[in-house]
Image 1 (cartoon, rainbow, N blue to C red):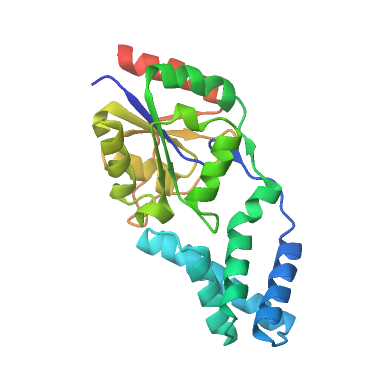
Image 2: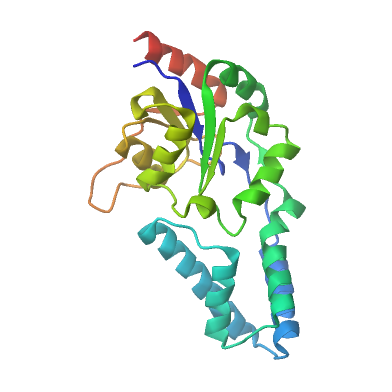
Length: 248
């Protein structure tokens, strides 16, 4: 079947993160928690609570195939600290966490702005993105700022659908919105476990983009090796690859 739809991962595929001063962010978070609770927190205790929240997020993502929100992340941390915050300050902290990326906005991956217009004229495009602390509504702001929204028929973010890659629904709900069968679609992403294995499991072809991050995970938990249908270093390689698959 000819390819008529392409789905893209967001992080390390369309966008490259900037280096962030996490120590400064954590200090600001600690000060806000102390202000909201009226309690002083020892640095070691705070660091342990943050570590627990991060580990809980990673475990939830890997095992439950969903991404915790900033509110849930804060809940884990505060429970470990045995603190309760004033609701107004809690809401302020949550919003600051969700919007912090706008102060250190990621940059577009090379060739994205030049390749997308041509691809959008030939195929239906969508984004399938796992979100971290930053929700889909904020990632939409980045796409709009860079004038990319116009090229995508649909945007799927894990915090909005309640599932993250490699769960089948992350891919199948997107394909339904695009009006494409799995055999008519290709997914582009950097992570083997989520992007490549997830797309292939529903019957899509999967291309690993290694221009920013070259994930080399050994395989799935059941020991099966994850092998992309193709690997590209540049987004400029995508159109010739799809043309070869369509001609073949």
